Image (cartoon, helix red, strand yellow):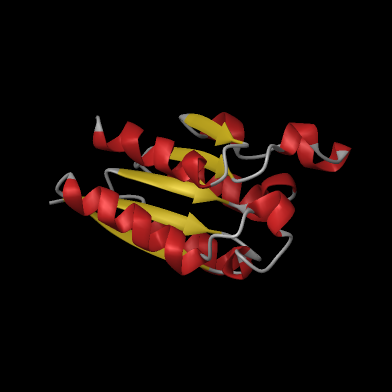
Length: 142
């Protein structure tokens, strides 16, 4: 069975509570459950990991990045600051799609720069939970 990993960065554990006008009212558990059901229905295994800690996300990329069919990654605020996460994405064999619930380019100036985007196979932003679902559909179609 092919495995797809979903990595959620800092503060995504607060989905459904944190600024629902920006991030929606779906909890992280609800999001993971819906993605897992989509994957399972198509014969894929979904592994979901969330961490607020940069080094743990680097470890997760390294652990999942040689055995996953694809990785869906929302690096949260680390998108704009983490050379370590960029280097981890560049170092692994599995393709990575950067996702964001909101549309960073339509927000504060500092959110418009992604250090990871150019080492990812794609980027899907601004569609809420559909950003994750679109990335999952892409990998399941490969």
